[in-house]
Image 1 (cartoon, helix red, strand yellow):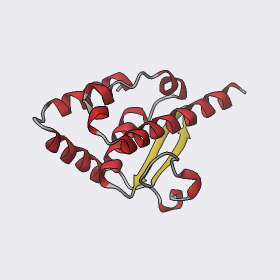
Image 2 (cartoon, one colour; image 1 turned 45 degrees about the vertical axis):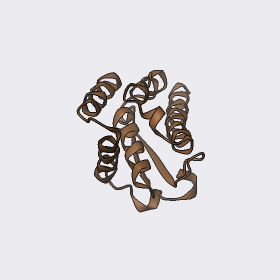
Image 3 (cartoon, helix red, strand yellow; image 1 turned 90 degrees about the horizontal axis):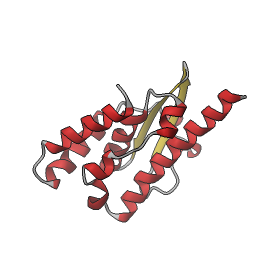
Image 4 (tube, helix red, strand yellow; image 1 turned 180 degrees about the horizontal axis):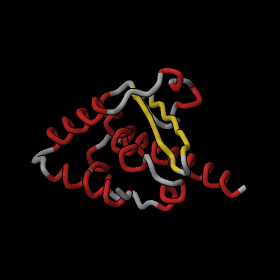
Length: 141
C-alpha cells in the first residue's frame, strides 16, 4: 500500500466518527494497538525532542526500506505516533522524504490538538524524515 493510500485509509476511518470525543477514543485505541517497542530501544538517543510526552522512535533499515517502532508514556501521543508509523513505515527513504503528509489536516487533527501535542506530532514527522534522509544519503555512498 502506498503512503497516499494509507493516508486515505486513515481519513476514511476518521470520517466514520461524528465528534471529536469519538475520534480521540479512536486515537487512544490506535495507541493501544501499537506493537510494543523492544525495551532496549527505550533509551535517550531514541527520544524525540520537542515532544511534551516521552516518545521513543526506532528505525530499522531492511531491504531498502525503513521500518519504525515507537512508544510513548501518554496514550494520545502513542496513538498519534502509531498513525504516523502506519503511514510511513515499510517505505523507501526516498518515498518517505518525498511524501506529502496531508492526513493530519484532512482529519482536522491540527486544529484539535494542543500546541504542545501538535509540536510533538510534527517533531515525530521531522525525526522520521531525518532518518529517511540519513539512509538515503548512506545508500548514495
